[in-house]
Length: 312
Image 1 (spheres, one colour):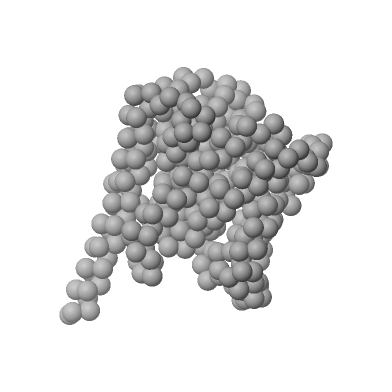
Image 2 (spheres, rainbow, N blue to C red):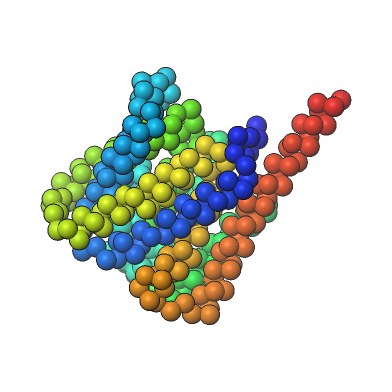
């Protein structure tokens, strides 16, 4: 089985990865400027995200796919993936209120390791040594980037454990997308996933006593921006890519988020990028590039092997 879907060029995959990472990177800035509780942000982000993907699906004529065999057969799994997405957002956002930002970022950035392990166990998409090396290099770059910005203060244990749980949930979410997003329009898949995530988060909000009714125009605009940029143009693109490339490739590329977030902070908030940060950026990008290069190399080897087999 080819690692890269034959209907999608490598250039298209790389460009979409760049788009998704740059859009996901906007989340941290939008979250920072919002004054609402974390769970409320998650609820509106996923609810608006579901609505927008449903509208896009209606425009594209995808809505009949709601009755497709893939949706009917995999409905319980889709619900489960939506709950997992809610748990990822909820645990990670909540960790930011209970532990230091660097501890939360470092721990949640360990998700590619869990994705790689789960890909091997459940999808049979095992990594070669170069891919493992690339993942570890990218994670090291993320740790270095956080360290030079904040120092490695691990903060409260509960918050640290929530961030680590967020990493595990993100890995499971990627594995679920890789297995169950195929065979249906991505608008249908994501509108279902996001809606389930919103409903699940609503339950968490009610249990926590949070008021979800936020009508301040500035907050509503932030929620809509969270839904459009990091969700529709970020997570939705990632879900599309999961139907084209292995889950650990998408998970590794997401490690570029600190790079994008820092660049956006410089552009939007006027933050100055320090020279040492450029080193962290470079290390992350080298690690991600190593994973992509290894995938391309493995893909070429498989194609050559198939051609040799066909010629005999």
